[in-house]
Figure (cartoon, one colour):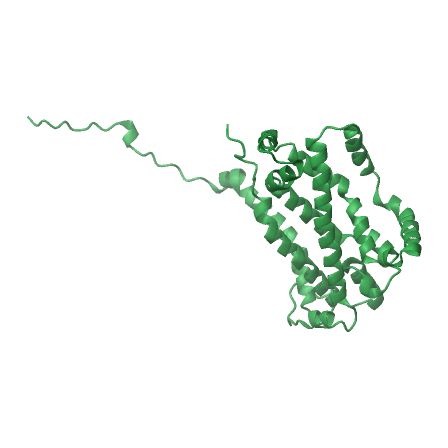
Length: 306
């Protein structure tokens, strides 16, 4: 007799073939999600494709029968950058000055205020937080008359900060979204463990050192989000910019005000208007690509070992 024992096959050794899944069942469980995703993607990409197509159309109109022009040309970009009809380059520089300054300074001021409200206990702290939140409830349109009078009076004393001043517009933007940004950053600061502050205090660190070397590096994701939101909002903002810059020279306009005045005055240069819109979106895309690693990362994970 052989010493080896023949293995007895069990039920688990057999593979039962799955019946092919029908198309109706696949569509009911998974397929409809693909349809919704592609529909949302097409809905989001159509305006971008339409604007890019109009900017490459040498006819300079938006009424073309085809979605993509039969003849592609960069003449709209060339005319706009040459400044033959409008000082577009000056508008771009003004927008980068105002939007970049507002993003950096507003984020810095909001971070300082958020650190005080999050880490310190003082009289009037709760009242200050509620006051900041209450102020944000009023619409911006209520400020136009008072803002115009305020800037006019300031310009009578300091002409460099009067109507038509880019610096005055930047100063106004610093207070516009400061309350919302303070609440956003404060909520993130509250999630950073206080044990890190206490450990730094034991090591002899001051409050400023804790703020710059401990809290800010851990809060990089929310700071990047706030800076990006402020930058995008400032580029797209039109009403306040038109009040402050509308009475000044054309060279001091931002892109929103300048492009509106351009298309309103020319009355048909839609190709150049579309080209300006495409170029106005390039800084936003570049900033998002630069900040995306902070936006998608959670630097507070693992900060305190349990």
